[in-house]
Image (cartoon, rainbow, N blue to C red; front, side, top):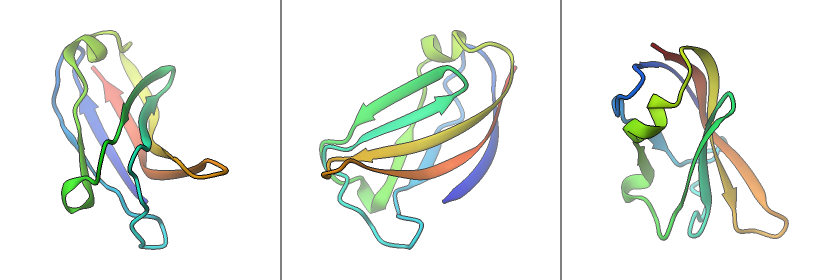
Amino acid sequence: RSSTTFDIKRGDTEPVLEVALIDPDGTAPDLTGATITFTAGTFSHALVLSGAAPNRILTMQLLNTETDDLQIGVYLYEIKAALLTSPVRYITFMKGKLTVE
């Protein structure tokens, strides 16, 4: 699991986050149909994977309408997957600090 600090201005779509989709133990879980969620404070952005990400790297970019809704401040964030297993298995791939300007 990696930890990254990044800054974003309200209304911007950069930076683009690249997330390695590897278990903390180094294995590559089957993410087909998994829901990947970016959460920072009360903000949440989710997407469902329809297949494997190229090279196990997920590129996640927030929309300018989403970042425009963020309040200025510092937030803890995480990028987590909910796998289609029984029971549902959760993996946190990245977490860190987000500063919104």
